[in-house]
Length: 618
Image 1 (cartoon, one colour):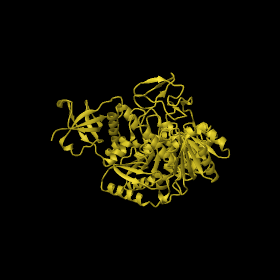
Image 2 (cartoon, helix red, strand yellow):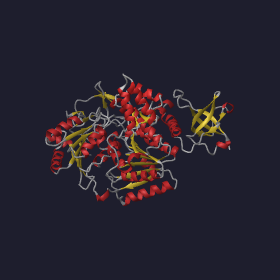
Image 3 (cartoon, rainbow, N blue to C red):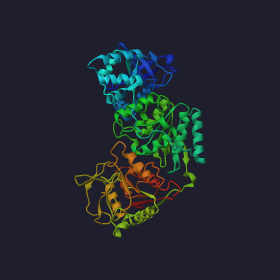
Image 4 (cartoon, one colour):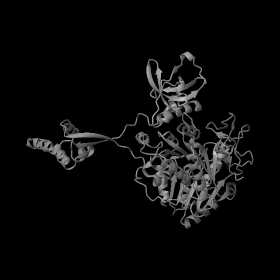
């Protein structure tokens, strides 16, 4: 057997040193060393700790220059930091970033956040010492009344929080330190964790759901494979409303019951509230959240709670993947087809591939779920790389919504230039009369650019690449693939209509139009402007869930994974927006988006309808 070499990342604090060092693995270590292990290595004239990020039987470094690994620092529990450093190295090599960028992504809490410390003073002295100190104070002509109040309070209550003593008793820090020096009290510093779940205080209202035959079969097969030690990647392909979340919760329950941890990934912050509520009702304080709207201090505290095994389930978008669980058993990636799982900041990683890599490092399973899987995932499932499971029906024989298409070109010919077609207006009126709820989705993706004709529906496309041209400020239409450009036409090249231009609709305009058409309806809007606060998404979702509004108007964030039982009508106002992006995958993305949007209607025992408005019904 030839030599085995390890790529070792030395000392995480040296983030400016973007280099992996090669060391030789001794023969007696070859069978036990793993990627992610902490090791002790010679570095210059020192011995330093490092993390193994790759193992190989080849090295470009001259043999006489390679030093041996001195020790593998195995512990009873796996080192989450080691796993995450190895994951950062994968991101560096796979996505072309620097190690420093990858490490900042994997360890996002940073140095800005400080631990939140709570101080409590405890009575240390006996009754005789306390009485003597009080007597000394009272014999003085001028003494501290505040200190006397504190000593009297300690006689009644031997444990007093520092803040309470300062604010309620008027005691200063000098008084407290003086008593501490005399040995009368002692100060205990207690780490206090910030609570990102806010007003959620405990599990309540959870009712055990009876799984359908399909759900039961899927759960049984996945659990059996897990118990056999198989750590697979599975694709759960289920129609909208088929109960994928119930399957996820069964699997989480199984893994947590074995003493392991789970990460539940969602594509949008907007989904956090509903997802956390469902998990919290079942698992209680084992659940926490991680997302970009949290303060650095809140993120730091959730990482510390994970390290200290105070939680075992983390929910959130991409950043939740890097939770430092030391015994990770399961990663769930809901709505795996979503493009928001791709980071637009260096390192530009894809969460799916990074999650699979972390699962391999941790010895965990991965479950990808979607009603419209990405082409890559579905192809891999069909090829046998992933296990494929299907959920083909909604529980309780609930029907999928009826889907209709409205041709906006016909609406224009009839003189209707409003954003709401006559058919949609009629359905909205009927739905409101029945006391049911409505969602209106404005597909604004890509609205910055393409030019289309409202008479015939044609879009100006690149003659070379067959993607839509994008209108720039210079007045020219540009192709973002090949660089072709042409002047913006004033009439449609196909039908010579003068109704040609860019789409300029916004959710605020839709909200105003709906309120004007249905003045008695309670309308709320959910978009980037109305969800700026930390709890902006949760506030609107809770309001709509509690039937405090009749109509919800919004962008993509309202159609991804939400479950509103009262919604029976989904109106998709402009389906063409994403269909004509200057992106070769726009067809696939539009199909996923529309399928998800239609799936929001009729999720309870009430029948649902989805209406798609488009200039291109074909």
